[in-house]
Length: 299
Image 1: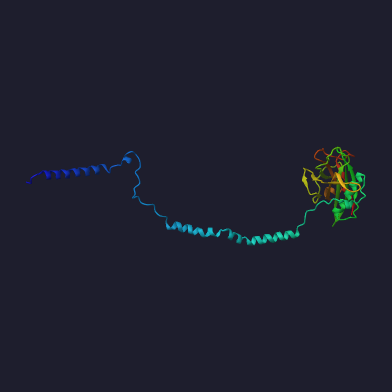
Image 2 (image 1 turned 90 degrees about the vertical axis):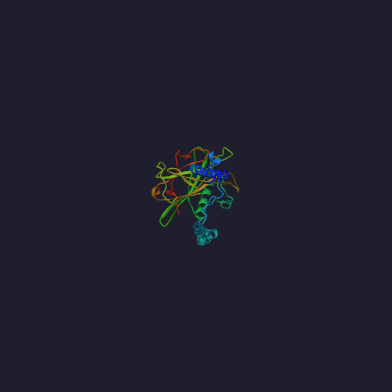
């Protein structure tokens, strides 16, 4: 038998103690840290695996897009549109050669009127209307018919000089209108902003109808007025006897209408209106103005 000494007893006891500790660790598991026991996440370990590096295929995908992106530079776009710019420049140059300025209304100058300007206002307006029509037609020898009117509400006079022009069997009435106040009751004209509200009719009491296509006005500022047209007059200083102009104003326009459709037998029917007046009508009939274009002198 072996003798049990103090050293052997201690060694045996240590062996049994370590065995019991191993059993407890295996049963309970690894000891939790203080943070884990309080419910906090464990700190990241310095030995955690690093994220995977970007794959080579990702960079290859970007490289496949870069050539297309580089090709959309402004320089390449400008070069690609060079042909379009050349065509546009050629079109602009061609249009500039054929472009003509819009027609304007020529008003007789003092030289055209001469020094013998009539003192009678109606005669003076008729002279301006005839000369304005001659300038518009480029025919100094034109001998138009002249029709004169006075207005209701405002003391004003209207002179109309008109002719019938034929071209390849098509007849067109051309009229020059000139109007001004015959009595000034204020320092400013009550005809300011004068409008020509017009249509065509079979007679002075006829039904208003729209004119046939192809009509024109100068100035070219006409708007649809619902069953009629509304045109504006140009404003100019009124020529005075003995030379000079003003201070009174005159209002002028030119109207051209084909003599077909409702105008084969009828005429132009109209009323006038300024910014501060009611509708102005024919003082002789107290009704709408009627212009018998069929009675114009033929050229």
